[in-house]
Amino acid sequence: MTHELPILVEVTRGAILESRHRGAIVVTDSNGNLLKRLGDDALITSTRSTIKPIQAIPFITSGAADHFNIDERELAVVCASHEGEPIHTETVAGMLERAGLDETALRCGAQSPFDGETARLLLADGKPFTQLHNNCSGKHTGMLMSAVFRGLELDDYVSGEHPVQREIAATFARMSDLDERIPSAIDGCSAPTFGVPLRSLALAFARLINPPDEDSDFVRAMRRIVTAMINHPEMLGGTKGRFDTELTRAAHGKLVCKIGAEAVYCVGVLPSEQFPHGAGIAIKVEDGSNRGIGPAVVETLKQLNVLNEAEVVQLKSFHNPNIENRRGVKVGEVHATFDLG
Image (cartoon, rainbow, N blue to C red; front, side, top):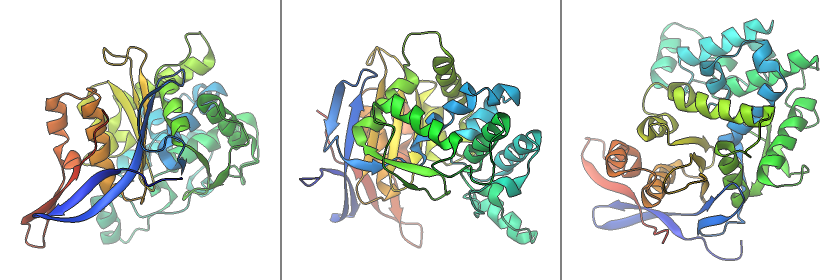
């Protein structure tokens, strides 16, 4: 990065400007044409969980999803960063059982559920949280089921050299016009994460929602994933209060979206009047603060006319969240400050 990134979001307390979140926004079409840009579109960022929908493509094209009779809800949880609610853990456990496995086969690590109520109930009942509660357990289950179907080694399925991970890397490279030797590191869930230009992430999501006009297993897999994500937002995040879930609900089939750790976010906008060929959006808040993500994403979709006023109002708690003190008094707010032009 050769210059300072623009300010995307400000945090104010009364008339006092307390904090700023800088970042970059990139919008492309499926041909790689740059439609909008704010900041450095070549900014290298870790993909983190944003690419779960793309990591799910080989699960389908390998034949594993059909072999194990995966339905839409189950496919959605493979693409999810879920809350660890019973609807998620029971779904994942059922998928593992169909593959002849259980929770011990996962390599994502045990995690306290994101959902506070679920975590409290576990504590009250004296039950431990497990790998099923890990927000990435659905993704890992898809990887494991692929390995089982293909007769591959299971213990090291998260290794970058494992055939399942190599196929995922090749798929992402194909979607983003990158070389298969993409720089990688280990994600929080132990699977590989990639270091890529922000523009490449936008391109991958543009192609996810508007794949090449050809009848192929690859294209059918992407369409199946998009449909599952739109139809089952509760599986992507949670039953209430999660940004991915609420944005998908508010958009009424106009987009798919996926958050990643360290404040990276991707959206695929389906073909519409504004974007006849669809669009991919990638946003990175430089300091990694998720506080800046909601305002930046909703404001971007508002300025692009993807979301109408009623839909923006529905997302107010993410677009313009209040800051409250210990007494519940509103003392400030978080708001977007940029103009995409």
